[in-house]
Image (cartoon, rainbow, N blue to C red):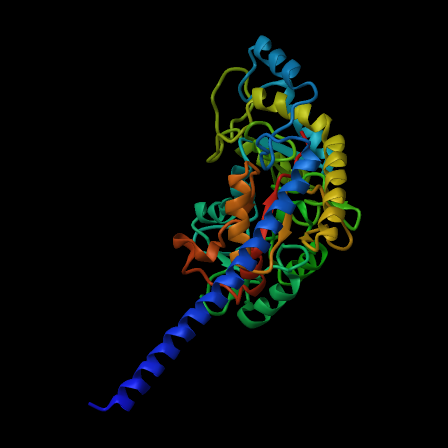
Length: 419
């Protein structure tokens, strides 16, 4: 037997095992450091949130706050028996919304999705057309487009606004859009007419809506603003919703002002506003007793009961925004001290800070924070999954989505409504 050969084999085998053990030790060492770092990071963020909300109890992401005349107005409505789509609070909620936004005509509807649906229909979105929008958005935006048989086309967002990028929009249009003899823009790739553009003011941060508006005007593309999250937000001194043909707001239970459900279509085109009000009330022609309808209408009107709640909320909107902006300012300073990126309102904007957000270095950090913070009874949420990743929109045309992908994988919403 060759003892030297056995000896060499033993040495090689021992060295290999030693190397494996050494590598394992190094891996465990750095894993412990990483876990400890993430634990400290999570604990630090949770501590900041708990200090601002002054509670050790469960902290929700964005609960409704009822601090005004909500109960009084709702009881008034019940006693009046006008709890459905006819009532004084419906008209009052529309007037208050116009006062807050500076938009001439506001029409109360059942929710923000209905507002988008009927608004897109009004500007000419029809079957087999296309609507340019952003993939980084709540699914309602693309759903409303789909209700009309149209297809969303997804253009990337800006990193600073989280909303539709005018630069990426211009790039897409220059490559794929042409104006044909009828004066309308068409997608050269699909031959479908581009029937609208719908930017969304993400988390209440206004996108660069002035540049987007100019691009849409140049190419004869109707602009519809998705303002579901931006009541009280302005860009260059003008409230969101004033830049396009019309806009849609949401008053869902998690919004800065809520009707329980509810939405609002707004337009500075008074005649368009009158027509929108007509078709959202089943297109019923006024008459003392006859049921006469002059076109296909929709039963989309907001009930007076919901409008009563909304009126009380809108009366306190400026105080609610003031408190939220104080919280945002505190967060910004506290996270700066911890070297954590807190997303702040972009240049030229005043944000309502509907949902506040922090950004991590990568998705692994984001996911670990989401797990740990929720386990500690602090509700946090990722941005919505990109529309391009959902089955029903996976085949829709999209650009590179570089910024959208980064934001979706690294941004987390944290508790945002002082209660």
